[in-house]
Each structure stands twice: as structure tokens, then as C-alpha cells.
Length: 233
Image (cartoon, rainbow, N blue to C red; front, side, top):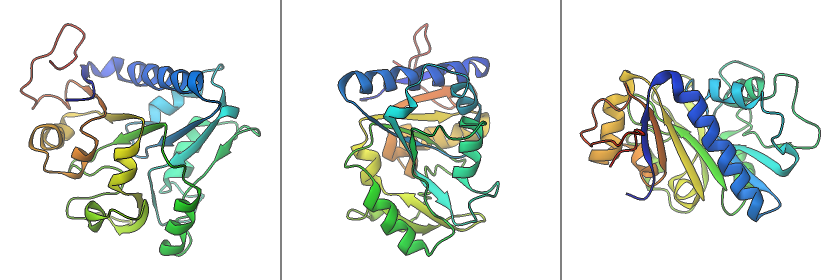
């Protein structure tokens, strides 16, 4: 096991995730002039983004934001990952001195995937991921053709629930990330966590070597012992 697996109570989840992100940003910027940060969609990270929005000492002008997946919908709609995330992270608007690269889900999927791949750095410094009840991560769903993709880094895919047409990173982008955090909350994700970490039978297992932050509900099916800080041992 390469990464940390930590289990905490639900009320401490947002603080712990925020602390991890801030610590990794500082670490990257200590070693480099710039940080490439890839954000996750879904409901779990949203309170984390809201808390990050209250932090006044983040050097956003030295950070470029990317997204791990997007639904093929108009950009200013609630179903758009970028729209939802940006509205929580920057409620007063994106700072003028920073760069945010969204996936253009409103365009032809193949063209949008090629365009996004062209602007991706060789390696993402910090990647945030969540998982679904079925064990998907980003928009790599069980049985997806993306699971076997080794050349492309961004590709169009079909999801398991509407809106079906998606854009997603591929496994190589996840494997190449320098720092990776998987955030999981809720008992409804417990089976997916076990499938990913123990059975390695779902797409979220692609992130098995990253750090995993889980609340007690999401971790209830894990058989491993934990120390006093909740770290799986």
C-alpha cells in the first residue's frame, strides 16, 4: 500500500480534506513556481471547495486548475462540473491573475477531448477524485472503454446515468499524478470502497496508490485495523 488510508468521523471530513489540499499545494509550490491542480466533480468535494474559498492565503496566481471529467452539457448549467465547482470555489468570480481550464462539454466530444489533452501538462501535481456507488471515478465507469485506453489522456465516454455523454481523463493521467486524494463519504459508498481497495474490481482501484480520506460510513466494509488517528494499518 503506497498511499495513506484514513478514516474519520463525518463532521471532521471537510477540515481534513481541506488541510490535505493546502498542505500539498504548499509542498508543490515549495519545489516549483507553479502548481497544476485537477479538481473532482460530484457532491462530496463541494463543501471542501467552499472551505477553500474562505482561505485568504492560497497563492491562486501560481495555480492552474483542471477538471478530471465533464458532462457534455452547456457550460452555465447545474449539470456542468466546472460551473458547479467554480461557483463554490470562487463565489465572487475567478481571480484575474489565475488560469482555469474547463472541458468544453458543449462542443463535439472528440474535438473537445483533443483540445483538452493538448493543454494538459505532462503530469498533474495534485489530483482530487471521488467515487460513485458503482465504483466509478472521474467518468470512468465499470466496463468503460476508457479502462483499456493507453494512448489518449482525455476521451469521450458514455456514462451509466444521464447525461450519458461525458469527457474524462484516462487511467494514465491518474497513474501519473504526483499527489492524489480520493474523497469518499457515506454508507452508500461502502461497497464501492471495498471493491476498490480490497477487491480491485472497479475503476476507482486505479487510484489505489493515492491517499484515501473516508468517513466512518464509507469505510464500514473495510476489514483493516486502524490506529488512534484513524489511519488504516
